[in-house]
Image 1 (tube, each protein chain N blue to C red):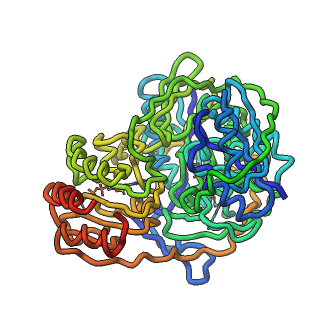
Image 2 (cartoon, rainbow over the protein chains, first blue to last red):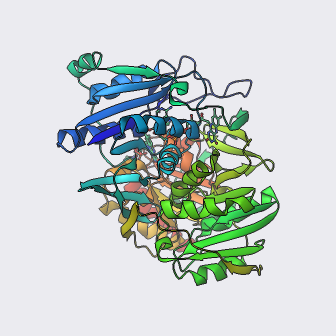
Length: 249
Length: 313
Ligand SMILES: Cc1cc2nc3c(=O)[nH]c(=O)nc-3n(C[C@H](O)[C@H](O)[C@H](O)COP(=O)(O)OP(=O)(O)OC[C@H]3O[C@@H](n4cnc5c(N)ncnc54)[C@H](O)[C@@H]3O)c2cc1C
Ligand SMILES: Cc1cc2nc3c(=O)[nH]c(=O)nc-3n(C[C@H](O)[C@H](O)[C@H](O)COP(=O)(O)OP(=O)(O)OC[C@H]3O[C@@H](n4cnc5c(N)ncnc54)[C@H](O)[C@@H]3O)c2cc1C
């Protein structure tokens, strides 16, 4: 089978972001960018399926500025076979990304699309579900286990009360949660090899998608800052403060 | 203008997250309808009809709605959307799962995880793990929104007397089926609605050691939580995780034990009224947000804390 893995270039999770002084967004110039951590998990899962002989080809796609090529190369170094960049400088909302993925899915006919459950910049948690709806496919979101069977997959999902298992007809969409697997680090020889792998570039227009945003960012502001409190000397003082000062116990 | 709130429930009880979502709907303004889709979910419809501020309850009762499958729920909700200006669901794993599908079927954007309503079309939501707050305006005709339940006071569960009507069920999608469910059993309050939460991190060392936290939690009638590191290490189940990619909690009292205070963890608990941190490292970032910090070895401090509680409770 063929697996499509969309990967997003985001501000590295170790970076503490700063809001721009004019309130138009967050500062992304000169900050470290990386692959969205959930997408590393998605690439890993696809590559493992290939190593197990379940999948024949893993196609990695990214949408955004030309530097997304680096993100694609990282995924190719982890074991992806080839990459597609849909290049645009426009800001992309999940609905536009989902529509472009639909365009690609119609060209590539994957049996499964594995995405991250959320991107850690916008925390939208939408793209996989939107894409599944546009295709009329089943979805296994927040996956902690994926089990491929004949013509279908069973996905165990992390839900608020515990875990749930659903069975989906293929083709289907899976979105990854943190505990699906532990992504590998790409080894140097593989990084070198990845540079030679095929990477095609398309534009949103090639896919017939209008990416005009539906949402207007009115402003971006710092959250109200919490004031640090005091250190207490011992447990007795702590209990006393909670009882008599904060009155929460 | 009429607003549809999609209720979260287990076919017997209305989930508390629905009540915060109703409050957000009231803040937008207009009549509030609640959709209860499930199987033999009459008791939930009755409960929803009593919620203060609800004008009408719509019930879709069919076997394939029993487990809230996204594929089936989304086609039902999208089919009803024409009567509404806004569609709301809680930003729990229930709402996050199906709402984006509804948005895509209607060809509109979704505004995720809102924490306040600025006007009928403008909402504020956290981005970058809560390190920035974005105010966004939706230009779509129908606004599809998920609501962070802990950011809104729960609507009163009693006092309303809404009419209950049934609506026609949509067809089963045929592409996804429920197989099984493993719910964590607990007699403790639910993590996202508990007044007190006691959380443990990697510093707990093992699942066995969580017993000392359980003792404290039981005395305080608190829920138990954990950092991602504690969940990844297998100390506790995944649904205990608090943080950017786990649950968002905002109790009156949050006690963080052996948790360093990574931004992804803080994103899930910074909204708590009072924060206590117990950590042996006085430099741990958790102390920057704690109202009361205790620098101590948790294996001494927690049992002692438990004993002190006996004196005052
Ligand atoms: C301040 C601000 C606030 C915003 N608020 C909203 C909002 O409330 N709602 C909204 O819809 N948009 C909003 N946006 C628009 C924002 O640009 C998009 O949400 C974002 O580009 C895509 O969302 P996401 O990555 O969080 O999607 P998610 O749904 O969280 O992403 C999940 C997965 O989809 C895949 N994916 C996503 N994007 C790409 C990509 N470009 N290339 C390849 N794969 C991808 C990845 O596998 C990823 O793990 C906002 C933007 C800003 C700057
Ligand atoms: C994409 C992504 C998403 C994430 N989402 C989340 C999330 O939702 N929630 C979350 O929590 N994390 C999340 N993380 C992980 C986060 O970055 C941290 O790694 C994690 O929160 C650390 O957990 P911890 O504080 O328990 O462990 P550590 O950082 O290892 O801290 C352990 C603490 O225990 C203290 N300690 C040790 N022994 C004792 C003792 N005997 N007595 C007292 N104190 C002791 C130490 O001083 C230390 O401060 C995410 C990370 C990524 C990349």
